Length: 464
Ligand code: NAP
Image 1: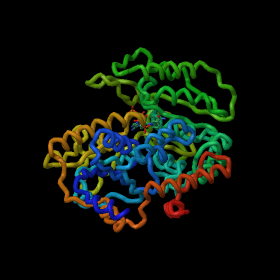
Image 2 (image 1 turned 90 degrees about the horizontal axis):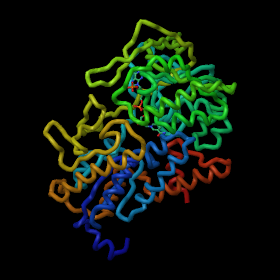
Image 3 (image 1 turned 180 degrees about the horizontal axis):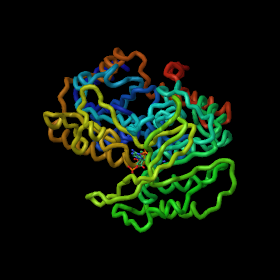
């Protein structure tokens, strides 16, 4: 920075916003803030990992490159002159709430809901009973999961849950080595998945086809699996016939049509199969130290007070022998240090995106995305959600209701953060990681080879 720039960079006129988390919600919040505020508003984007984009990098399935291309929008935002990325800086560790409150007018939490929900059934903790969240992190090369082990040495795997994560897991288990090699799946996962003995994945929905949480394109694309048939028993679909669901929307109705088409299509005799089953709840996972079978109850649908159809177990029991179980029944949040948490909903306590503590609305603290509303919707859902919260923030800015930290120059604030975390990964560093991963990909005929260790990522960040 030149002397002249330094002289004007006193930070006096700056309104500073810290966003914690660089996934879709944090990136959309940053974009909306920068678009709808005056020149004086500056955003610092904090990210725990050395890599940005949250679940787009670590959650979206490797065979969904189109969905991942949304990062181009986030890159544009990150290149904005009034935004800085501070990667490899963890809230509650290198940087605390007190640090942020001392330097920023507002803080926006965009931390997602990172952990799996528990089933609460016996045997859930046996070997080969896996949380889908761990499997997803592992095949996507998230550093926290690089050392996880998945035993795919048996013929059948059962996936519990009827949402898009269950379908992601099912597809990843059914893709062939050739199909996987065309993706950016982590090297360690490619190796294990290529050796997998799993030939059948059974996806279990506890309610009927009309209540499944799949979205239409995801359900349809099962038919594109090169080596797997999709199997649906028409008799099982018919169990829910004649029970009207007042909450069924066009997605639900189209899902039913797609499922009926699958049920009517004879198996093509491919070597692998995805079996979609309905009205079955897991009661126990059983086996000698490791999962060997799953015990299920046949459910029927009953209307709750609000008309929603819920699953009620009948006396009928089924046992499915299985080598492994993947639990894909949704995500939940974990509390951040010093930030109010709504344990019942698994989100940061908030009213319309304004963080709420026991004392009422917390001045200058906001939340967006899954940490605000829970783990629902597709990536684009986070745009409107983030915009709504940012509009509240801008209202509060206009009304003088943000925090009032002393002025500090950009350079002094950066020095403060780098003092707390000397290994900050800024946007230029991320550019070097990104280029390096893509170069490794080109060398091996793949879109990208992900680095999966923090130390490797930090080394690539500094590579000239
Ligand atoms: P989800 O859509 O909420 O689905 C969770 C599933 O688990 C539901 O079918 C639910 O059934 C079932 N479940 C919950 N508790 C259960 C229990 N105790 N026993 C048996 N089943 C149980 O969650 P998700 O699949 O984790 O996805 C999270 C969000 O990310 C969703 O909005 C999803 O669309 C999105 N996503 C999108 C994509 C994509 O666009 N390609 C990919 C992945 C994820 P009930 O309905 O009966 O509760």
